[in-house]
Each structure stands twice: as C-alpha cells, then as structure tokens.
Image (tube, rainbow, N blue to C red; front, side, top):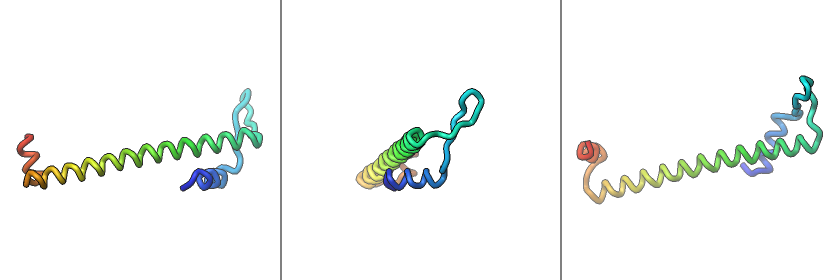
Length: 84
C-alpha cells in the first residue's frame, strides 16, 4: 500500500480526530488533522518496512542454512545432534 493509499484508508477510518484540552474534547483543525494522519501513515509504513526487512533476513538465513546443510550432506536433525 502506498503512502497516499494508507492516508486515504486512515481518513476513512478516522474522519474526525479530537484532542483533550483542559479536560475538554476539541476537534482538530484541518492542518492538525492532516499532520496527525500523515504521521500515523509514516509510523505504519516504517513498522511494515522493519517487519519486511526482518522477514527477508529470516528467509535469507534459512536459505543459507539449507545450502550449508546440503553442502555438508546432512539433515537439520543431524546438524542439531552434532551441535547438541
């Protein structure tokens, strides 16, 4: 999902945003609303990017492990026994 799409989705989910001022709920003005929605979108995208990087590393590690086991001619179970 692009940032523009993420912002549109957030706006649909949150058509109005409020803040508490002196115990009173006040609706955000257009500028505050846009800034808040954009910051939320940025945070969501950063979290998704971090998760994608983590997943990619895990996948690369699994491929490297499988290749090493193949070169050694042993199974994962046999390697676990050796490292025991």
